[in-house]
Image 1 (cartoon, helix red, strand yellow):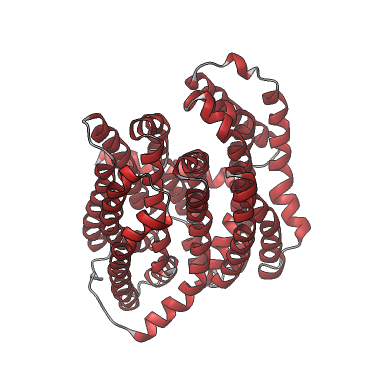
Image 2: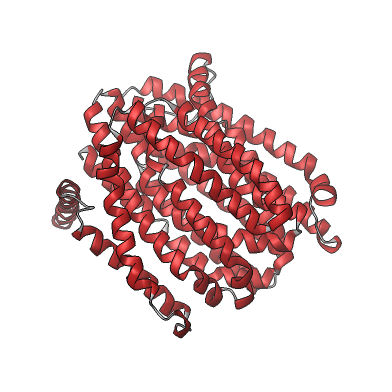
Amino acid sequence: MKIGERTVNNALFNTVSGMLPLLLSFIFWPYIVSKLGDSSYGIYALVGSVIGYFALLDLGLGNAVVKYVAEYAGQHDDDRTQEVIGAALLIFMTAGLLGLLIILSIARVLVTTLLKIPPNLIDTAYYAFCAASLGFFFTMLLTLLTSIINGLNRYDISGITMAVMGATTTLGSVLLLRTGFGLLSLVWLNVAVPLLATLFYFRIIRRLVPGVSLRLKYGLSVMKRLFHFGMYSMLSRATDVIIRQVGPLIIGAILGVTSVTYYIIPFTILNRLTVLIVRIGRVIFPAISELQGQQRHDTIRDLYLTSSRMILSFATALTVSLLIFGPRFLHLWMSPEFAERGRTVLLLITVGVFMDQSTNVPSFVVNGLGKPKLSGFMSVARAVLFLGLMVPGAIYFGIIGVAAAFTCSNAIVSPVFIWYVTCKVLGLPLRQLLKEVFIRPVLAGIAVAIPLWFVPQARIENIFLLLLVMGSGMGLYFVIALLLGVYQKRERRVLMDYLTGVIARLRFKRKS
């Protein structure tokens, strides 16, 4: 399969496989929140936030594994692939055990001193953190194994596995709550699911690369190579953890755990929706790594411009729909009270996430080129701004201040990073970027926003009708984008070649 068709294949599987967990979350989230209650759900979210901090113990090595597995496996070099996998397995297992022990040691202090946990829920919160520490260990192993599979350009396998995990977690949570179980049962479910996925991945990797075994291997030179790449990639990961996890903790410490729910739900909505867009962009990373090894620089530039335009068009379609219909969605999906408290947070985060999505492809491209320090420094700058604005924002403006800090940090850093990658790293003129990437998708967004603005939302009293209207608005965007030339002949040709190949393979299987 050609690299263009393979990238399309990975993007489709990686994106479509994320839709089922997203759909299930939208259907069952209100039930889970109402069944647990604001305080218990706030604790559930805080447990995830704290565990997210310790994900930094992977030291950014997940991306390093993708980079070097893609490079060496593409060269059919089993020995070097084995070195990377063996050294990474040793590092990830060590980090997982270290995180497990640290979480166990600080759990009591967290629930009694640092977080405002209601007295009647302190013991439950403590045991939740203890159980989650084991889940952290399995999640670390799962991160490594997922990186290996993605480095082998098998996003179809990792995407489907993540979809099954997400669906199992959501449906299992609903089943447990309906049968009378509570918060702790949900935490233990989040331990069992990564464990089962880890066992599954062990078997799959042995089949994909029979010449490579999953065994611990100490190699100083390969560890240095992984850490050199990973330490800069970790900066990006640290920013992600800070932005996604610090906000809820600051809110929990300053405003109480009930306010966490009114912040975390709008934020998680955006996170779940944009994960689909990130899944599209993520497949660029191993493709760029492969092209870099082959010194195909012109193809890299073309892939950068094409991918950036595609990602921006999807992000624009989603952003326009959420800005116009987002508050009404909260009103019908959760409750009028929830919409009143969470609408401004949702709108602010939507704008910030749109700007963050514009750095999606540039980040993956510089990582694939072996320049992770650029995306790392960008992430540090954004994190510093966020931290500087977040605390005073929370004190003076509550959850709206935290959301505004998120948006402002992205608005300042993202344009500078895009300019630097485009003009300084890839040597493309800024005018070409604006012409080929930004102008037409944004014009399509403005064109579709005008008729959507006049839709009488007060008459939409059903959540499914609202989703239909939002989906129709996004569909209208893609039609207008096609008419404006956002999707060019080259991209359409690659997609048609891919679909033709899929049909041909299906026919061959039927005949055989």
